[in-house]
Figure 1: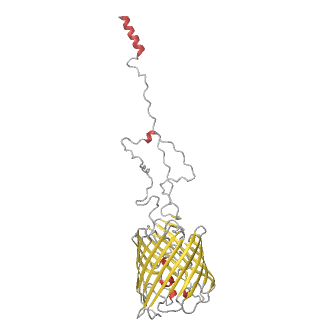
Figure 2: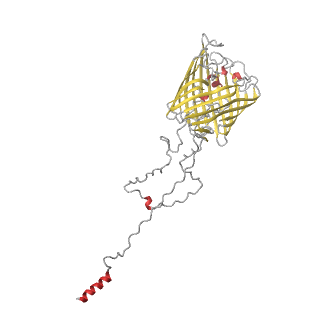
Figure 3: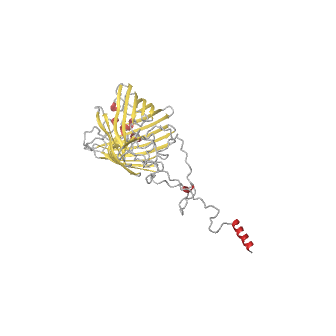
Length: 491
């Protein structure tokens, strides 16, 4: 019995340790501490409050100060190490986002303003009224060459310089008759300087003046207007600006295909006056309306001298008021500012009908206009009709040479083609004019103008050459043909 007990003790010593000994299997190793989170780089210092920056159109908007600097497109992206497993796990109990959903932006990232489209630096700038020399402050060839940004204010220059050389002109050509010159030589047709801008995105404005206007070369105010364009269905403009009557008149002086507007438009459209008008555009200009009230229009006794552009500061002294209305449509998309299709775009069509009544102190004048413009693949075609009826007052407020009612009619047709590859455009225009339908004389005429334009920089810098032949239908034929060359800078 003693021998068997010793055997049991020996077996226990061989097969297992005593009760107080440690187990033979080691404890599991503790997981390593999580890698520290990367420390973000300090934000790049931004411009001080109120700093001025020049933003050329088409350039991307500057990144907000809190955004990280962008990697250059030609630089290779630095390799990134995979995050440790512990960092990739969400906290306990957190719900995982559904598959395919974008992760939320990191804390501190700048978000776009509410309502702004993706990739858009801000809200669209307010447009300029039809006919203004101010280009819309937007990107692309339709915008100004550059803009000056001062907080919520955008400014751009207005510069229109048109220098002309006339190597040939007939002996019977006169400026009062609408001819380009009265003799061989040189002429500065326009020297216009000013600025346009937009405040807070919906308050457009512009001020410009002619440095040398008229035969005396005296400076004259060209345009000075202020607008409120917060609602697309009602843009209000007030001041000296173009009357929304004729498409050719509403087209800027530097946006035409030929050196000058048609004879009929210069003689029968009110052009720029002082007043106010409201305009609205619907479904991307599929339908537009214009309605306004201006100072009464003053006509010159010389038909081709047209209406006096009442952009003076003296106000309405001798005439009452004029009322204007226009309906227009551009069903295939908005038309550009220029009559030429410089973008060689898809087909676009614009049509409009206009009416005005001037309750003047010397004359009561009714005007009717209709126009159609088509552009496609570099070609453009324009047709326009203008009708005026002038009735003299029995007791005029100014001396008046007109003694009986006069009805005038003008027809304009223009076609052209622009070859973008060589920057060359060619245009031909035909006009038929009858200043007085009740009288047959040498003022009844037709005119044919053919011209070419070379565009160094879109419609900003271009050279032009025109030949005009005028033919009197009745009376004595006049020698008033002309060849004119022009160089234009239009900012």
